[in-house]
Image 1 (cartoon, helix red, strand yellow):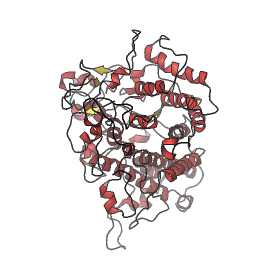
Image 2 (spheres, helix red, strand yellow):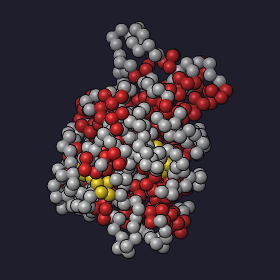
Image 3 (cartoon, one colour):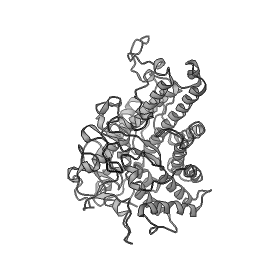
Image 4 (cartoon, helix red, strand yellow):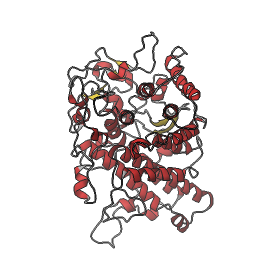
Length: 527
């Protein structure tokens, strides 16, 4: 990967993840036991790299390996699975492929047997599992027993806080998408243990408490290595969590004041908008980028993966679009494009041009869902540097574009929405200033500046600023426009003109495979 930390060789922290054998007295068949893996500070850092690396890689051995069974490794990485679940059921994206599970998203008729939803659920729980393993091995007792003290011991405690964040992030994903998953921590037994099912309310409280607990334990904002957790990442996830509190906890349980508090902490931490919006999504977006708070890092040589940003770029282009100009000379899969509702968000009758609108093609309408040329292609992500250089990658099919999990612009939008929803401690004029900062970057001048706004404006502006960044499903749910007929888009619910769908689809089902394996689980309502 691009920076020193993520260049570390990653591997599974063996002791808690090894397969069981009938002879409990046998040593693990993998020679790298926990006592070897955690013998040195570098060893701890290498295992921490695996916890981070589980965001970017499907497995440990290149494109042909996966930590998950039952799904092609090319579809098994976190971002590809998460992106599909967050974008394909919305107006921002529609896919022409008929791979198992994909048509269910835009048709909004998924069931508990959807293989892609099961893979995302399992990927997130796997990530929780390896974080738990690291946490078992980084307690004060373990650190002391291995002879660590002073600065080295403090560094390991910082690593531990970062692992807690990554686990909290995955529990947030599970809470947002599946609501009531099984719950397990480092304090639970290893082996023949059936994890109990938690509730969305309990999980909200757990994620919140974890983030508040680690806030003073991680490195101060903008002081950690690139792509590692710091206080700003903690604040950013708290702000996102609080903005959606009424979704997770029910009407009347809003936490908009808290959303203002924590988005403000990020905003005041020294970040700045990158002057060129396009530069946020190029192959050198890790360089001179004061806006990205925490990314998933990709490298065309060191993290070869048919998911991640390799998937986002390749699926959005085909051979007719000159894949080499997108830094993908060996790619161009022709899969995802937008419905006309996305480019219509950028319609401006004043004649001004929003530079964030990055589309290719001439036909906005999708008459045939199986035709890639029906609908505008999204060209937001490009695997080239600002200077137009394509990074090295075997076969020319892998991306070096980092994916921003959190960036400053989202925090501006959280602040503005939370103010408008009645949170205390914020100021509408300040919010207007933040929104105008986004507009001035988008238009290159003050021609589109606003003097006031409402919630409909915020939803539209989130679509313009954050499209194809895996926000839209959650946003539409918060604005009560994901299900029902109040807001429809082309092919919503599998109908060309769009239709309302059942309200229970704001939550995905617990996969049937886990219901069979874990008798403590109950299916989500409607499935």
